[in-house]
Image 1 (spheres, rainbow, N blue to C red):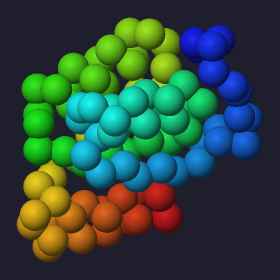
Image 2 (image 1 turned 180 degrees about the vertical axis):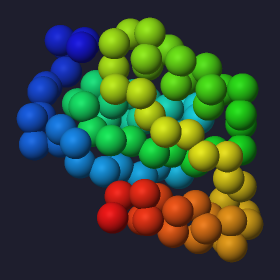
Image 3 (image 1 turned 60 degrees about the horizontal axis):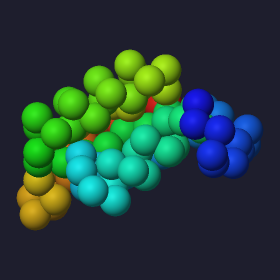
Length: 90
C-alpha cells in the first residue's frame, strides 16, 4: 500500500460503488478505496481502460475491484447493475 496516504481501517470490507471509475478522477477514487481494502465495484463504458485499471491495482497488491460495463446514459442499465450488486451483497 502506498504509505503517502492515510490508512482508514474502518473502510476495510465496506462496499463502495463508483460511477465513471475507469479513468481520470474516478479511477483514482477506485484505486484509493481498493488500497483501503474496501470492496469496490465500478461502472464505466471504457472497457480497455477499466480492465487495465483493475489489472494494475491487482498487480500492485491492492484489493481487486469489480468492473461492470455500463453507460450511465442508459438509466435502466445502471439500475440493473445496482440491483445485481445489491443481490450479490445480500
